[in-house]
Amino acid sequence: MKKDFYFNEFSESLKTDVVVIGAGAAGIRAAIEASDNAVNVIILSKGRLINSGSTFYKLCQGWGIQLISKEEGRNTYDNFFKEILEVGEGMVLPELAEILITEVPRRVHELEKWGINFHKTNGHFLKFLCCFADIEREVAGALDMENIQNCFRNEVAKRNIKVIDNFKVVKIITGRSLEGKRVRGIAGIDKDGNLMIVESKAVILATGGGSIIFNHNMNSPELTGDGYTLALDAGACLINMEYIQFIYGIIAPKKIHLNDKVIESYSSILNARKERFIEKYIPKDFSINEIIKERVRHGPFTSRLISKYFDFAIYSEIMKGNGTDSDSVYLDLRNLKNEIKKIKKKYPTFGDWFSWLQKRLTFSEEDLIEISLCAHANNGGILVNGKTMTEIIGLFACGEVMAGPHGADREGGNMMASTLVFGKIAGENAANLSKTSSHIKVNKDIVLKEVNSLLVTEKEAIYCGC
Ligand SMILES: Cc1cc2nc3c(=O)[nH]c(=O)nc-3n(C[C@H](O)[C@H](O)[C@H](O)COP(=O)(O)OP(=O)(O)OC[C@H]3O[C@@H](n4cnc5c(N)ncnc54)[C@H](O)[C@@H]3O)c2cc1C
Image (cartoon, rainbow, N blue to C red; front, side, top):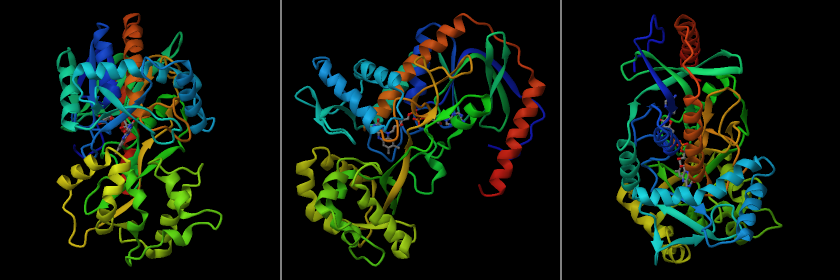
C-alpha cells in the first residue's frame, strides 16, 4: 500500500446492499446470512480471505466453543448464564449473554454441516472446565486450521458474495435522515493504494480486536483495533474497553501459542539468570500449590482470583530487571519434558498441542524458550442491541469488535461462539434493513475532505511513533 496519505479523488465507486468489514468468523457468518436473505453483499478485508484475523491465526492450533447440548435442562442453562454474569463482574449485558447461550448449539451444528472436524470421543464432544468456568461443559474443539479455512472458504464460494481483500476501510460514511443518523457506505484504500468508495444501505463491522497495540501480543498484524475508531468516528459508543485478555505466549525463538496447562510445571519457569523465582513472591497466606491449582484453571490473567500472584511474580521479576532482553522469562523445556507425562494424563488435549508445537518450533540448543503474557482478545467494544445494531441506523457490529456478551473476564470458548451467533444475527438484520431502504446520495467532496484529514492524523501518528 502506498504511503502517500493525500488523495485528490476516488478511483472507483461501488454500490451494494450490505458491506461487511472483516473476514474472520463473524464477518463471514454475517455475509453468508445476508446473502442467504437475498441481498447483494461485499466483504472488505484488510488481510486475505481465510488468512487474516484471530479466527484463522496460523500461530494457534485452532479454537474451542463451549456449549450446552440439547438434552441438558433448564438448570444447566441457568448455571451457564449465572456463571457468565459472575465472571463478567456485572459488566455483561444480560440480554446478549442469553442470546449467546441459546443460539450457540445451532451455530456449532451448522459448522459440523460445513465439514469442520470437531474433536470427539465416541461421537461426543469432550467435556472439560473451560477458562473461568465452575462446571464442566461440552467443548466443540476445532484443532485443524487447514480444515477450518477450507470449510469457511467453501461456504463463501457457494454464494454470490464479492470479496475484496487487502482493502483497509478508513471511514464509515454517515448522514442525516428523518429517522436519525444513518449509514451511507464506507471509504477505504485498496491493495494498490487507491481510495475507493462503496455505497451501501447497511454496514457490518466485524474487524476483530486490537491486541496489536501491545508489544507482546498473540494476534495477527491487521488487528490494530480499526473497528473501534471507525465506530467512534461514525458516532457509535464503545463500552468495557479496559477489559483486555492476556494469555501466556511464546515470544522467542518465535511468536507462537502456548498451552496454558504448561503453568502446571511452574518449576520450569526461570529468570534471565536461569534461576527459579516464582515461590519468592507468593504471599505468606497462600501455598504455591493452591495458587498454581487455581492458575491452571484459566489461560487469561485475572485480578479476581488468587491465581494473580503467579502473574504478579513473573511481572515483578521482569520489573526488577531479571527478565530476558525481550521482557519475558524462560520456560525450561528440559525440566518440562520430565513432567510432561503427568500433564498429558491430566489434560487430554495437551499431548496434541505439544506435538503440534514440536512440528513448528525448532527448540534452541539449551531448550530454553521465552514466554510472556500477551494481549490476545478484547472483551469490550461497540455497544449494540439484541439485533447487533449500534445507535447509527444501518451500522451493525458482531464478533470480537462488539461488546455485551462478555464483561470483565470472559469464559473460554465464548468469543468464537459470539462471532457465529451474532454474525448470523447481524447478517439477517442488515439484510432486512437494506430491503426496506434505499441508497442515500453520498457527497463525495465532503467525504474526500474527511478522509484526507483522518489520514493526515494517521500519518502524524506514524511519524510520532505512536
Ligand atoms: C491465540 C488465540 C486463541 C484463541 N482461542 C479461542 C478459543 O479457543 N475460543 C474462543 O472462543 N476464542 C478464542 N480466541 C478468540 C477468537 O479467536 C477471536 O475473538 C475471534 O476469532 C474473532 O473473530 P472475528 O471474526 O470477530 O475477528 P477476526 O477473526 O480477528 O477477523 C477480523 C477481520 O477484520 C479485518 N479487518 C480489521 N481491520 C480492518 C479494516 N480497517 N478494514 C477491513 N478489514 C479489517 C481483518 O483483516 C480480519 O479479516 C482466541 C484468540 C487467539 C488470538
